[in-house]
Image (cartoon, rainbow, N blue to C red; front, side, top):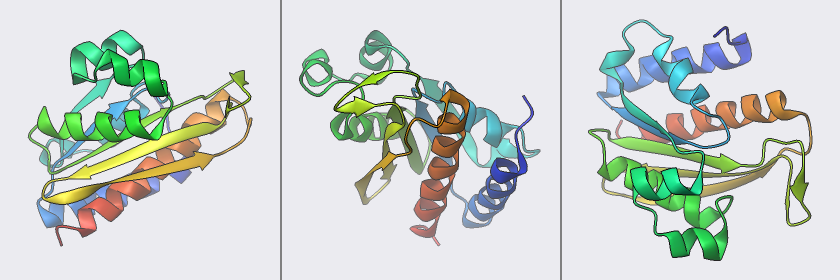
Length: 166
């Protein structure tokens, strides 16, 4: 996959920053379908900073792979702060990473009034630190743009996470 410079440049900076800090990264992705992991592993030497990525698009995958209870998904929906938080925390538990980012959202088109296209929830879990959640409302900018904006935001969160270990 060919990524635009607006993604590759921050990914390279993150990779170098994580390598210097000795930090390993893991991802849990829904609406990006593995774009974050793919972008990071596009960089030579990524095995020094990237442990694994989970693409958990369906409710079943979130339950089976990450252990998120079905009742949490039913109560909050997959696109929620609670699910993003749990995705990040469970990814950290199921990996050898120091930090884990999660993304779950509505890339579009479509959505519903309280969960419109462009709504994305993020989680950032770091060993020995409280989990951070973030919500972005990118608007209905088209599926590809929302996915790229989500990936860029995840890279920023991961960079903040690396700072916790510096």
